[in-house]
Image (tube, rainbow, N blue to C red; front, side, top):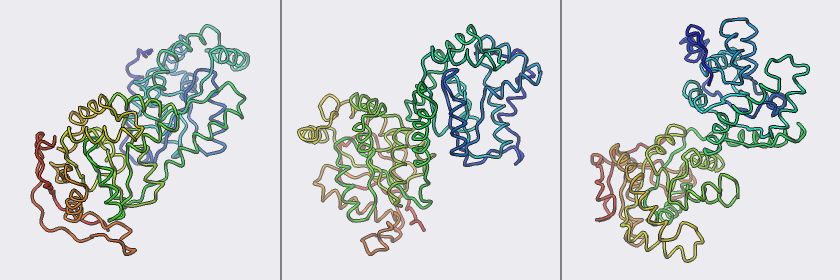
Length: 460
């Protein structure tokens, strides 16, 4: 990335990124950002104009803001002009500062940011200093098509960078620095790749589908939503016990695993990537899982949820609670590995699941011990974990599950108001939170005990 030499000129944009403390410099809490990326001449500006007309977004072009700075005649503008002529990238502090100022000035909530970020450090700095984007639209176009468009534009645009030599430098910069940004957002399920070779109206049909899907997925969750995480090694019986909890208490059961398998069956690029990760016994990126879970929660319209098989690592737990809300409690089914392996191999005879084989099962066990047990330790330490032996027959296990739910004073499910069984009584004084030892959590000894935490008050 090119660097401006003038330190004073770089300092001003840094202050703009951080913003003043006054209310007039604040961005709205419900700010929504869509990055629009593509090589030079891929048609970003044309499509952004159509999005603005149809959806009312405010369009900010990083390139236009930079060109305005150049036209201002400032020292910074002159430096930026030289960098652009060389086909390099202007320092990210300059761009973020200009973008933030324009966002505040507009007073809008929904933004299309065109031509930025163009490198991974820009993407990460923008999300750190402003907020993560909701979606990325990437216009995919062959270099020869883009070059032809830019040379045609150069006949009338008056832009110093619309010439063959600079265009080729810009292509190289895009491939080297910007394509990794698109790969990053594709890996976390935020990128929408759209071919830009068709006429603008045909391209916009696909753009509308991407935006409509985003707007639909952003419907809000109920404010009184209540969440119980259900954890345990593969084959510990989580699904069986969740079904019993749903029948008795009226919770809505969401399985992170089932949602992932549905994505795999859809045949999408994301689904294919998830399938390979699952075959290797690894964890799918948390952003993908949280997105699938949130969409399912909104769609259900329910209040009380059992989330099965998630979070499986501490970063997932923290990110889920940051992006959705903290859970009310965690139920952990403790089961020895040899019992779980026997159950999974039996299930594999009829399940058709690609991960129900001995080699993958053992990889999944190792992943669970290395990454998921610390999650249970964390929730035990803050008084939310309920450890239940899963080696007994399902009906016996469920006796302890009921005690955990009822003694923890979990919120009475909404279904209870219709006369369905639900215990909304507050629990008596609970024992202090106990942190399960690593040996106990691995299922070496289980007596059906419940590690009780501090009582959780029923929601209003």
